[in-house]
Image (cartoon, rainbow, N blue to C red; front, side, top):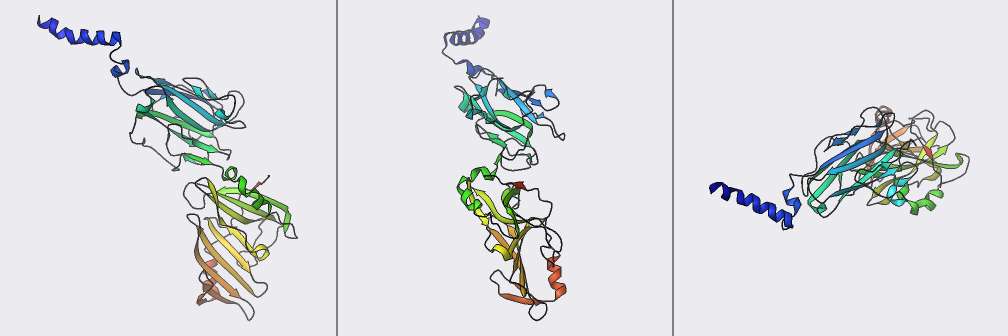
Length: 366
């Protein structure tokens, strides 16, 4: 009799499940497992990885070209959808390719196109019970911050390849997975693609005179503010010349015209060309801004700045009056003289900075 009583709860539970009074997912063993594999340049399809293990390569510089992902749902009503941003194609959801799901391939095979970014989200009646986190390793940036639930992870518009990815599914509200993060944000977009509204402003920089080469503009990206988000730098090509006999003797083929930062998806100009011919901006290898201004044969000024939060932070200014000999002064941002400097003291300040000449400029084509 005692054995019969012990078996009754098991029998009752079985009957309830059979008639549908208890949902099957109540009996799930635990959080779903996510399985994924990537198609890698020179290697093809890798073996399946799961639950936060890296798929891809490290230190080889190989691009990801495709990805497949699927869930071991543990009895939950769940699916997984994903789309990638592909070289020469863009986001798949913006094309007839659309979102992929549950083990189908996103990306390309045989075209040698790199994956640049990815979005992943959960579907199904139990999707709200879980978060899907994913982290990518991007060329030139390293491991980006974790994205989740459909957010973009990677880059767009820079031409950077994805090299590795980690994916994990956790109960809703769980802490962000731990691990190496080289850049805090999960997604970085080419600032130039955000700036259709400044095209006319940039075109106005195409001056043509004896100093400039056909008015051609160039651009590059540098993380001047050290916040993980590259600034957009617009440069003007100039004819080779001794850009400053002193203190920075040498050759330089480009000057900085404008620098933009991204704020809430919109451009913020933190430096603009406002001195025309006799004002020149240069970039220092340590990401300082050098502003060389000339008053003609008798006066020159060198101001130094650091890029901050949507602004330039003034550091110092050295001013030279040459009408009656070399007279150097240290001045504040308003031009007020703080103290006189000997030539040795002035050059000690100059020597803290230099002009970066190995910038990889790209022609700006509208």
